Amino acid sequence: MMNGTEGDRDRPGDEDRPGDDHVDRLRRQWAVELPDLDTEPMAILGRAFRLSNLVRPSIEATFADFGLDRGEFDVIATLRRSGTPYRLTPTEMYSALMISSGGLTHRLDRLEKAGLIRREKSPRDGRSVLVALSEAGAALAEKAFRTDMASEASFLQALDGKEREALAALLRKLIAGIENEQARGEDENAG
Image (cartoon, rainbow, N blue to C red; front, side):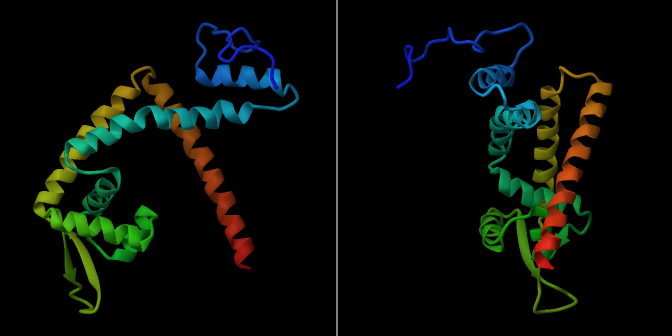
């Protein structure tokens, strides 16, 4: 059994310091409990998770204002950014969205019922299906994306232009490194 009263904030590491955030407090608490453990990964990845958790509700609310959930928006946005005629095969959509075929089918059914997409026979192969964005779907995708970008820009106001560029470059480098490492692992497992 641990000593102390539940909810005590008088433990070492609990104090707030100017300029600290939630992750700094967590790291200080872990430094007291496990002083030999390097928590530097938490300084970066913990903040990435925290950032995602902080902005996700606003982003989801933006899409909900347009009658969409995040996954449905991803489908119509993928079609819209593919360029005219805003059509892709289901395989191209799986790759772009990185979801299962079952997950995509469910989303396509809902979007088709709403009149935002349609399924068409491929002109090259009548056995194949293309997913096409309707005019209403294209207009909605653009409007929702513009609104989302304005909302996301508001989250970045604490950073100036150079800081945003630097952060984007560092995140790009980190993500590329992780993706390369995962691809290497998949290649080793396949071989």
